[in-house]
Length: 190
Image 1 (cartoon, one colour):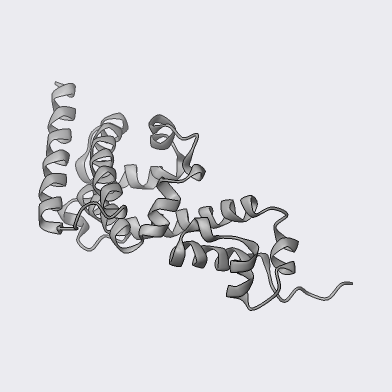
Image 2 (image 1 turned 90 degrees about the vertical axis):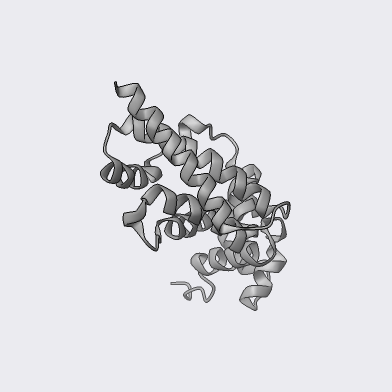
């Protein structure tokens, strides 16, 4: 029986995630990951035959981290969608490298808005919204898309250093987008 590996696959993924977090996903390579692990590149390449595979694993970890971040809402009774929207933008402010990795890289390719809104990973968010505002899941999806597109626009501009973060102004704009989307959904049901 071979000896147990000192550097596990999970350790390699964690190190790649750290590289993406600190300096950007474009810097994930065997050397930078090995440096984080204080080892040679051999354990990195043992667990991942290509850097592309490693980046995909780091992307999955970043996606889970992002989902947890979004759902950590300070005051959900004031509006879960507003909280999620503001957290989405805060994530871009606080974690610009991860934001760009998740939403502005080739790893996000192939996902249309309709694929995203129907993704199983989003269902807890949609169900929480539905519980808070009522209505059909289809109306909740429409509201979510409106707020998501608005929040994503703000987050993208901020993550790319093109706009200063002003939470009060952003909160007001997201509230307006949310309220407008809710009113539109209510009008559709009449």
